[in-house]
Length: 242
Ligand code: 5GP
Image (cartoon, rainbow, N blue to C red; front, side, top):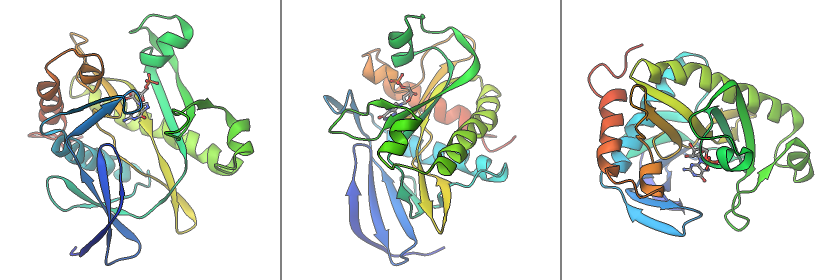
């Protein structure tokens, strides 16, 4: 598909969104810039944009083949993804299979403990407020989504987990937790944003080594190498298989 890229619509911490000559399509450009703790920590992860673009495309294709509607349309280049234009719902949806990060802090349960039934959490997507956790009543209060939309979002987030977790497990990656964003277009909802080591916790299935953005957040070193390893396992030779 050929589209003409027009002006910048929005520049986020890790991506730039461009308009195109098609009003229903946008381009996501994936940067190497990395931020953490609400942009208090900043840096660069060389090659990250390519990894995140390719891995997201790969997982969006798998999800589409399993009936999950995603905003992904096509890969235009190493860092550019053509996507359906969404009206983004200001909720970050997190699904957790293993205790880690803020859930370990909130509950006092140590990182690495498996969760029997996946935990779904909602956060209000607001940089000014620092993305606070919210519940269904807050979603209604703030009119972020209708009860019907929220039911669909929860069901779809768990469906994403059901598809992506075993897909990554076959590539020796444990999907600890991940963040999703959804949006509206053409009177229905779609999965948006990206699915990458920036938005997921991915641990080596055998050693438990962290192969995600926590290496940057926690100054663990080997950040670029971790992203490349995930790329190799997910996108590399045979990455598009089952
Ligand atoms: P936690 O709440 O433990 O900090 O994060 C849970 C999961 O959601 C992690 O996989 C983390 O990468 C992802 N996540 C949560 N909030 C954000 C965010 O604002 N940006 C990104 N990129 N990922 C997030």
